[in-house]
Image (cartoon, rainbow, N blue to C red; front, top):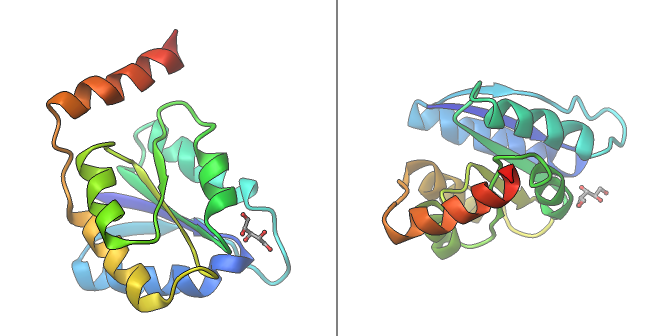
Length: 146
Ligand code: RB5
């Protein structure tokens, strides 16, 4: 599994935490910024990561900003992306099992690093259940491609 990760300046510290987690889990990833020496614009980081996931270059993505909202709104504009904004462990598991979410968004200003690590860990290690959920995800894909 190969993960594309990025953040804006509001998500810089949490991005580093999640990279440590992925090192511990033995998960391959590439960091797409930001360098964050100044304030940056979240779509400049969300959209390239979303495109890399949508075109199959990466299996999944993780996007972090202050709230996670800007990153999730931006990523979900890209066809094929199901970006879930998650701040609890239950939803992290459910969105993989039910929605087959392929990008996880989190907000560094919303939750602490301990909870964020747990969310990412569960999200990264939970499989899509398929079945009736595949029909529902299929309807989203069909809408995108009509
Ligand atoms: C940056 O100040 C902040 O607006 C951004 O990180 C994010 O929260 C946007 O949704």
